[in-house]
Length: 84
Image (cartoon, rainbow, N blue to C red; front, top):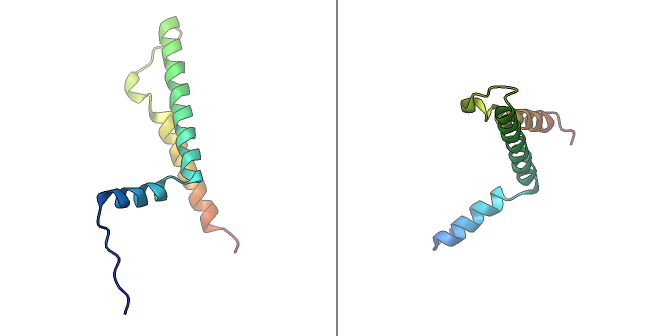
C-alpha cells in the first residue's frame, strides 16, 4: 500500500512551485518580455522628450504582450508537430 506524501510546510510547497517555474525556457521568455518592455519604454520616453512622436502611455505594454503571444503560439505549434 502506497503512502500519500504530505507537505508539512509551506516552504517546501513554495520550493516545488518555484522549481516548476524556474526552467530555462521560462527564463528565456521572461528575459525576452523584459527586453521588449524596456525597448518600448525607452522608445516612448525618447520620442516624448524630443517631441518626435506623441505617445499614449496606456498602450505602452502592447509590444511585450505581442511578443508573449508569439512565443506561446510558437511553442504550442512546436509541441503539436514535434516528431518523436
